[in-house]
Image 1: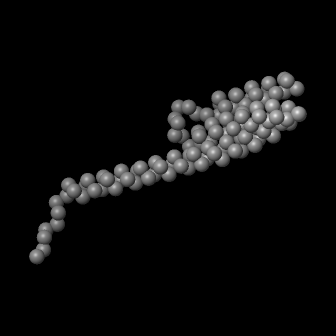
Image 2: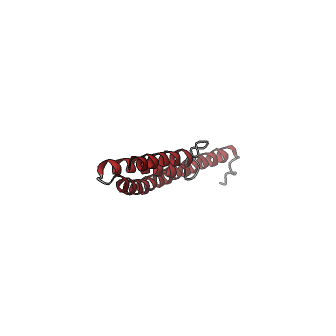
Image 3: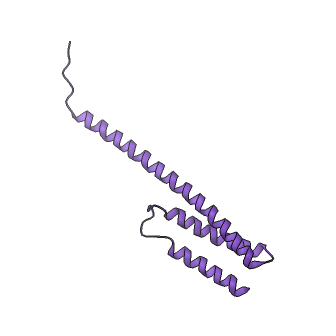
Length: 110
């Protein structure tokens, strides 16, 4: 049983290390993958410690933790993308105002 738990923990750590692309923090899916891996690892640990049947508890805890972590990571990515879009819109509006200020105004008609 201890070998099973040690193998599951090793697999979860390997998944955590291979599932995240650390070269670009803003790449699509990185936050979701990282949160799912951390959630799965935490859930498996808590499930193994809290259950009488350590292997079954680790499996259930890992599955629930992975699902919860993925949902949280997806929300974090959506919030980040929404903030980026808002920033780009503000910069675009600023640039448009700058361009309008550089142009000569239309002649006045009396």
